[in-house]
Amino acid sequence: MSVAGKISAAPTRLTARFRAFRCDRRGVAAVEFALVLPLMLIMYLGMAVTTIGISIDRKLTIASRALADLTAQRSRISDSEKDNIFAAAAAVMAPYSPAAAELALFSVYIDSKGAARVCWSDANKAGIAPAAGSAYTFPASAADLASNVSSSVIVGQVTYPYSTGLAGVFEMLGLFGNVFDNGVLRMTETTYMRPRSVAQVARDGQSTCKVS
Image 1 (spheres, one colour):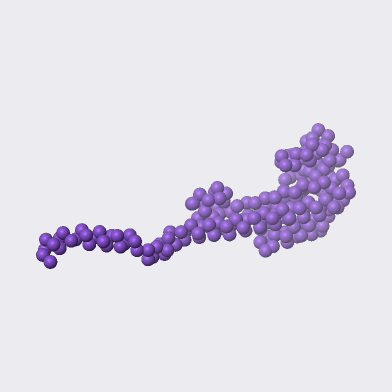
Image 2 (cartoon, one colour; image 1 turned 120 degrees about the horizontal axis):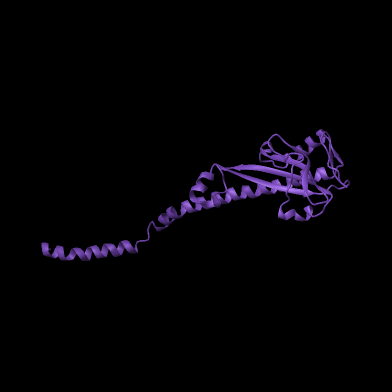
């Protein structure tokens, strides 16, 4: 073939090769998998983090109920009973670290004018409870308790710092609404219960509000 013929045939060969390349499906699955893999990993890790968070939240609910319920059943709480109640509530958090659970237990009195204040309070080493005598505001979900004047309420509160090494990645991607603060999500559950057999559960070594 002459040089002129080769030159004129070049576009035809290029077109044929392009058509063959366009129709070639070999390796498409690998390319698609490579594109989808990062998204799949993010979804998997996100589901894992969410599942653990849901599990911890359920544990928090049970632990806070244990604090309030075990206390509301009694007429008076001694130091040893308080320690046993805290131990029982912390044990509920297993297999997550019980030592990391921040426990607070206190009694709130609502006077005849509807003002609520803390009568006595306890916390474990990791937790912080409101000071006795301080004002207390019930959340909207427990507004009915605040409306019942001249009564007392036992409050059990558990906070758990949920940490994950993936928090930085999620924050960078804008996932989970940036709920993690320095890799930690503080989760809290609070349970309110009225004393079962007395107007107010007394606490040894602490003052008790007068319930009329």
